[in-house]
Image 1: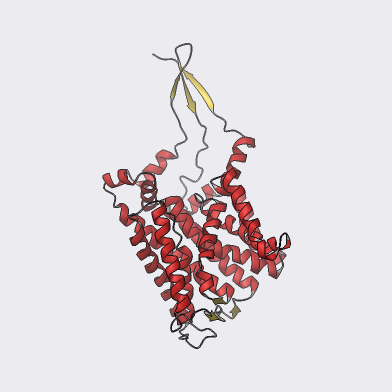
Image 2: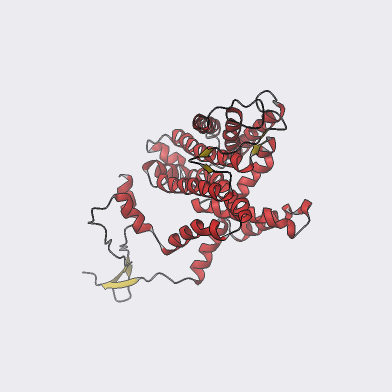
Length: 380
């Protein structure tokens, strides 16, 4: 069965499960679905799918993110909104691996850091060791390095499961941290690279709050739509099958290891784009940018929003950045991480699926119930 046939079968609006009735008849529960008014139109398939899945909340969110920099202050636009989009894009790579592949990797910030260091070493910065290559060459090379590094990490870790995968990826992250910390020839050691700014393209200074916000928004939306498309392809469906039962997928003829390594490669592309944006956002990169603290922070962001939902990575990033920015006003500067940890524990205890899981529980309890019509059919 192809992926399209599988989706049509799963999305069928008719459920005909006979239920015995006291009078000897059977009751068939049918869920009413409205016909697709665009089924016979000549519009492109992607446009029809977009129209069918478009809801009022999507229009509201799109209008909100487009109008935000024009009504918010430059501080909120840059320090909160843009940073949330960049961190959300990196966390999306982790959510994709964990939510759809069942692989929790703590090396995603390491992959993003490799892309950031590649931009700093090969491009222009305030450090003399940078090579000063043009950004049109540096950025593709940085993304290629991120994809290759993530593929190698996946090749090393996919043969393990559970806590062993976490420990292997954590060990890789710690090893890269000490490499950039102690190497002064290439990575400039503890100081890292300063004044790593985005290039001026089309006469626009992309370092300014509003242009950089729209740059981060574009790539965040591109990454989100890319993941939404990937999980509906035959590869994405097979990856979810390996998450649920790898042994069964292997018996059906699927190469489980290849699917998982490919998932790491795709996640490396997302993390690489986020790493380039992150070094442009900060204007610098140092060993602290890829330390164990950020490895754990990225996991916290993914868990806060909900790993099973692509949009959860950005929701968790918003909550994390807000807490990180304004928690100092609530508690002492040296103890503001207690607020972040307390919120994280509360959300995990009440909803293991993060904020989106909590929202789904509230909707199922207080929202409108699905209307199911029942038709009675007498047995012959």
